[in-house]
Amino acid sequence: MSAKTEHNQTAGAPVKRLQGTITSFVEGREFCFARGEDGQSYFVHRRSLRRHGDWKQIEMETLIRFEPYPGRKGLEARDVDVADRNHAIWSLPTEMVVTRNPEPRRGRVFHVVGELEFGDRDLEDAKAMLVRKSRELGANAVLGMKYSKGTGSEGNYRYTVHYFSGRPAIIAEARPTFDSAGCADSLAGVEAAADELQRRYEAYLKKLRFWRRVKQAVMAVMLLTIVWLFLAVAGS
Image (cartoon, rainbow, N blue to C red):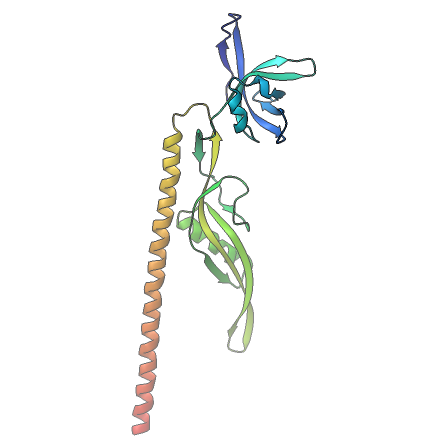
């Protein structure tokens, strides 16, 4: 964020206004604190807002724009504008988010699909399979990840199978802004990613059902073949 210069209409002198975010806020109090883009902490009083009704929008991480002022007890924010919480640029995380919680620590869940589960003898490989398939479906997060284990066998040999399950999702983080340009486009981009996740997930389920039917058909043919051979041997 860059500092902006405006003109004080009463004094006629240029005023360097800063942007910042609320870093300390207690419900019921008439003041809070903000971190300016210059790295300094500023005292913000309710009376310092340009529009007193904006105080209802104040919460942690709220974006404000203000005139810095050296008060008697420290830096103060005066002539404060509060960014509309509905004006935000939405961005998709660049790294895959994997969490055991149903909600991400940061950001908003735009879309989530059904649970996937993968198992393998190697614990890390099982987890990697879940994450890899989620990424292939277009997800940028795996929510509600759970671990369990079972037992597999090959002849008389028994071994542990590790299972990981979770729900692929699209999440995005909002960056408040005073400039509404680009907000609609960024939201449309996130919604398009959510639609693509759903489309790929449905195609994946359709493919699974197809191969399940193929497997059932093969098993039925094998069973009929065994019965036919048994009857042929018994009748000879």
